[in-house]
Length: 279
Image 1 (cartoon, rainbow, N blue to C red):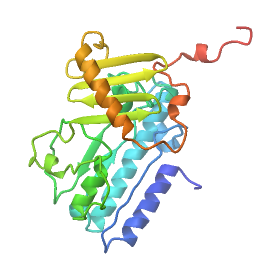
Image 2 (tube, helix red, strand yellow):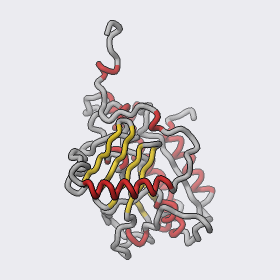
Image 3 (spheres, rainbow, N blue to C red):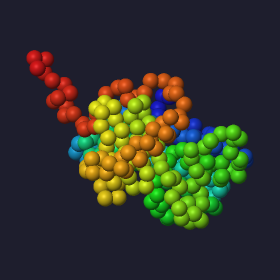
Image 4 (cartoon, one colour):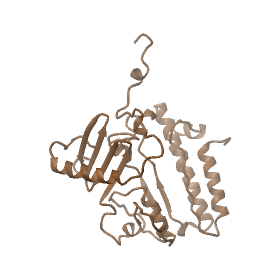
């Protein structure tokens, strides 16, 4: 597009809403902001002159623009008389990446995008549906992006596909307070040989490079600083067994894993990333 891409995507979303306003529709609006490359409009950059750090200022300007554009989408739904009966979900695909260059991007959580530390997998998740959901309710149990499909099916009163096993669950009764149990007994993550399992408040990460097991109690240690693998041998064995069972149930990946590439767990200072020529 010949304009700022976040604005362009909103233009296209508004067209889609207008074209489908008289029938049920599904709109997947995947903004690129604030992903790299970090590029902001002059208007948003100049509006944040109080931020001294240039990288942080550009990033914040991208978020400012994104916030305004999400407002445009919500206003379009309202203008078309669709907002009361439209389920809107806002979330992010992963935590912030180390290559953005902002050390505290996922603070206080440890880790980055492409890791299974909380900094890599813990993201915002908002649902708005005036006719179907209570207002201003904060839900604390862990959920998954896989739940979006089952939730959307339920909201549309559509039957799930026959013969398919859905890993996600319908979140509506949980958000409505009709089901007080946790939506998931466990959450499973996999990137190549890098595996993770969250079971209640416990999370296990199993790595091959370097070979190690990382076991954390997120209730007591949400920033994952105290590895309890050596102190909880039975729990470690049970979770590794369950992890292996889940992994064996998955189909073979269609493309090489991101784990085959180097992944930073801490940001490397610029002076180390770009050593002098005689170093």
